[in-house]
Length: 68
Image (cartoon, rainbow, N blue to C red; front, side, top):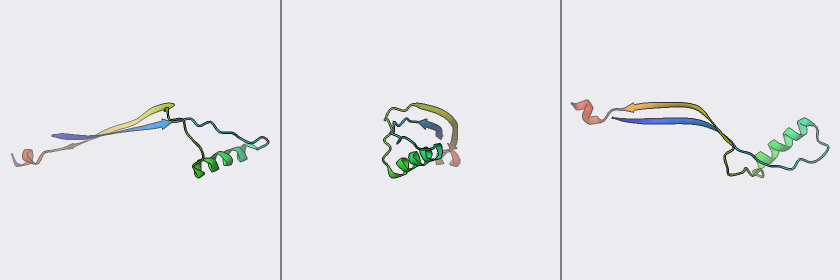
């Protein structure tokens, strides 16, 4: 018998970005979204945090077991 185990984690990374002076809070948010969408935001390769979300398993019977 085999099992396929799926683990789901939420990974959190950090990026250090320069924000122009004088932007309002909504403009800062839009600036960050624009950087992310353009691919210009470079995340640190070290994972800052990993949160466990779920684990599940699917049991798979071997064909020889079904025939026995």
